[in-house]
Image 1: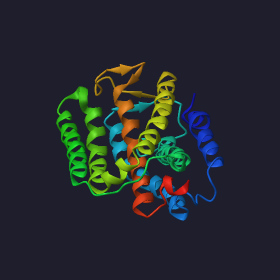
Image 2: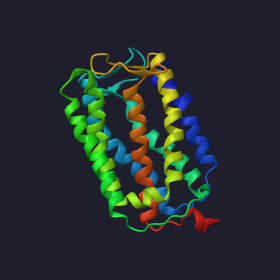
Image 3: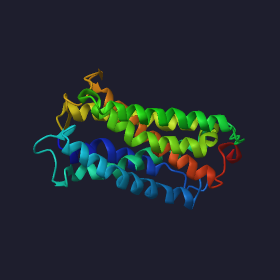
Image 4: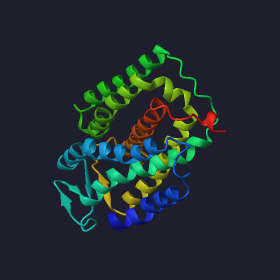
Length: 244
C-alpha cells in the first residue's frame, strides 16, 4: 500500500462522511467561528509540525518505505505534509459532530488551581521529554513530549476551566479519533508505509503499535480538540445545554 492509498482508504472517507453529517451552517456550534477554526487549526498544525517532522526523518527516528510516496519536500514525504492538514480536519469535524450532543453544563467559574495543576503537569512532561533526549532509546518519546507539551501546558494555563467544563466532549472528542488513528497507524506500519527506528524508540508496543506512536496521536488530538474548544467557548459560542 502506498501513502496516498492510505489517505484514500483511512483518512479522506471519514472526513467526507463527517462533513456530510455536520449541522449546517454550524450555527449551533459557533457558525463562522467554527468554520474558520478548522482551516486555522490545520494551518497552525502544518506550520508547527513541519520543522519537527523534518528533523525526525533527518535524524532517522522514523522513515518511509521505498516506493511508497510520490516525492519529498525537504526530508518529509508530500503525503506527510498532507496528513498535517488532514488529521486536524478529521478530529475537528468529529468534535463538531459531538459538540452539540454533549449534555454537561458549562460552568466556567475560574478555578486557578485547575489551571496551575494542568500547566505544571504538562510543563513537567516537557521537562521530562528534554531529559529523555540524553538516551537513544527514548529520543522519539522525548521529542514528542518536548514538541507537544509546552502548547498543551499553555492551553491549560489559559482555559483549564473551559476544558474541564466540557470534559465529556473533551474526552470523547479526543479518544475516538485517537483509537481510530491507532488502528490506521498500526496497519500502515504493518504495510511498510513507514517505520519507526528501533535505535531511537523504547521497543515497547501495544498490539504491534509502538508506544511512541500511540502517544503521538493522543497528544496531537488533544492539541486539536483543546484548541478548538477554547476557540469556540472563549469566543462565546453557545453551550450544549443552551442548544437543547
